Image (tube, rainbow, N blue to C red):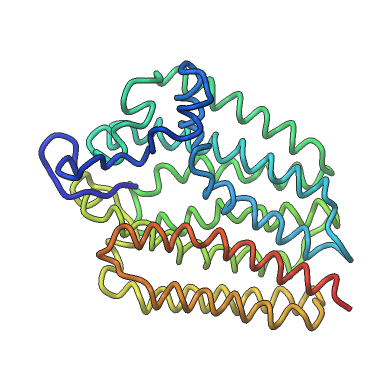
Amino acid sequence: MRHGNGRSGPLSSAVADPSDIRRGDWIDRFVPASVQPYLRLARLDRPIGIWLLMFPCWWSTALASTGWPDPWFLALFALGATVMRGAGCTLNDIADRDFDAKVARTATRPIASGAIGVRQAALFMVALSLAGLLVLLQFNLLTIVVGAASLLLVAVYPFAKRITDWPQAVLGLTFNWGALVGWTAVRGDLGWAPLCLYAAGVAWTLGYDTIYAHQDKEDDAIVGVRSTALRLGATTRPWLIGFYAAATALLALAGGLAGLGAAFWPALAIVAAHFVWQIARLDIDNPKRCLALFKSNARTGLLVFVAILLGRIVP
């Protein structure tokens, strides 16, 4: 996804330092130059995607537990989210390298800039995927099967923006798969509660990634990339109300089906309040605010986790 204003050379070239890579950060300061492009390719300098991928795993682990969730499982899911998010970003950048090279915000990314070749990137992606497989193999057989099934969605997502106005829905299906995996890891089965949790996550992603896509709508329209931001346009706010209302209702249904305690409900109300705050603050023509609101969903994920945890551990 992209954002920018200019059309000469890389798009957005009129904007001072429009790159989405921040120079002088911990990677520049502490990591050898030969390794830096790989860490940036895996987006380790921008961990928001890790949180958004990890939290549905944590939600379902807590939802399936009878008390405190197993910290070993939480650690495995954090590690798995880190390496698989890196693998997904690598695949996305391989697929989007020609688009990225035309947009100033993404032209400095490792593949688009030529810092890493496609073959090198592919080998890196395979290495990350193998690391993800090693994490997955720590769980029971059903979890391994369910987790492996997500690879189809991972493979499809980078190309969804070429064929549908709703790539955010495909992202939602992909990023929230952990809502199924965490439950199977704890209980060894599936049921309506994790399915409702999964659906809640999809609705949540439709909201936050539509906000994110509004950063890039001008460039997306120019280079031919499709998104809900372009599809919904000025009607984004009422749609966002619908997405977040659906997410809240489905979270409530998942909590009810799983038998969460009374402490879950006021905590869920705080989640709903955070959704309302995002909607109230939204300005679809202010890219910086869109990015800030998108990033605030790391807090949303944490709030949902805390709500589920309270519903399990508070008498």
